[in-house]
Length: 275
Image 1 (cartoon, rainbow, N blue to C red):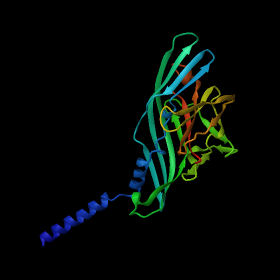
Image 2: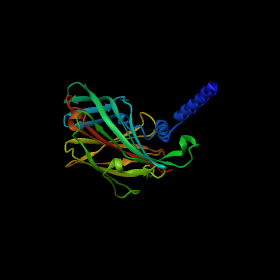
Image 3: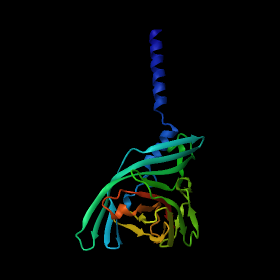
Image 4: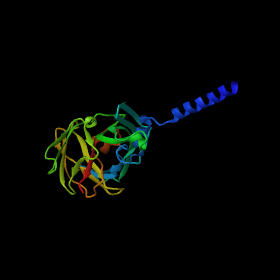
């Protein structure tokens, strides 16, 4: 009798261990996020270098390679729908190679610390026996990045104007979602006018996009139109690959002063190019 009870206890324990080890819906969504190579890697490293002139100062600036802390992932599941927030810190150095008047070139470096967040929704389109328990990514928001130590510059809204989108205004990046099968889609080489409305009257704004791999980056400085408004025209790429475009603004001293801290706000727009 004791032996039978012992065997029963072992079997019950095995069942309990098996149930505990079984993947949950939250585990499956976390696995999907970890396997994603496009949307859950928000950072500002891909801009490579850019050069600017301000009166008698010429600057070539770039963000160096970044490291990241463990992401904070919040998953809220209701039946066959899931709402996800993904955020993490990005850390590295911001560099300015400057020449003032006819003086020799000098290199300024400063700590780069920022937090980036993106949100998404997932739907269960299959069964629990399918890969990832039937969950699939459904929609993705804009990503939002902001410097940690000093944060005075902010983008209030972004306006996009082109043949495909005559007047598209985005005001709430983390609550603006796009179906991943129906992203904002530009025609190849389409002229896109982008306007940033910010609080940075004396700042600098840029568009950063990339094609496939460094150094094939597009870096577009926006024109300061006054009163915190920046505008630029972007020729959309040729390759039909979904990706982010980064619109960012930085304080003047971030780029043009050795003592100015990294002061940044960026919105990352998910988009595609038409086949």
